Length: 70
Image 1 (tube, rainbow, N blue to C red):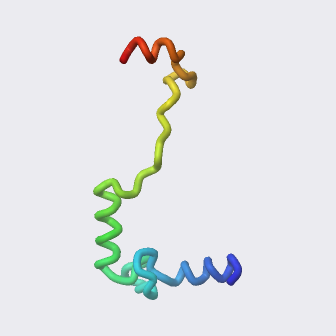
Image 2: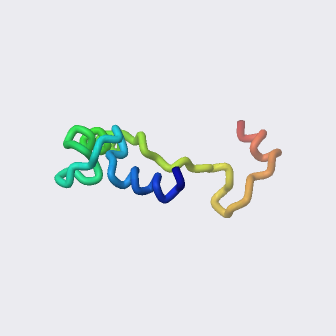
Image 3: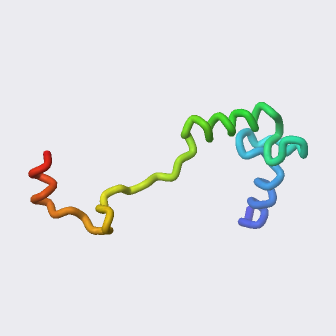
């Protein structure tokens, strides 16, 4: 299956369970799947990972300063 076929299949199926999409609950197949997705958003399951190693000015603090703070 090529990438165009995969996009077509995904566009017509529920992202949670894979069943055909119901127009009343698009892009989901049912109210249940829509509610599950909403709960995942509200509970923080869907989150963008962040890397907080840099200081505010974009530079890492010197290793000697990090050891003194501990």
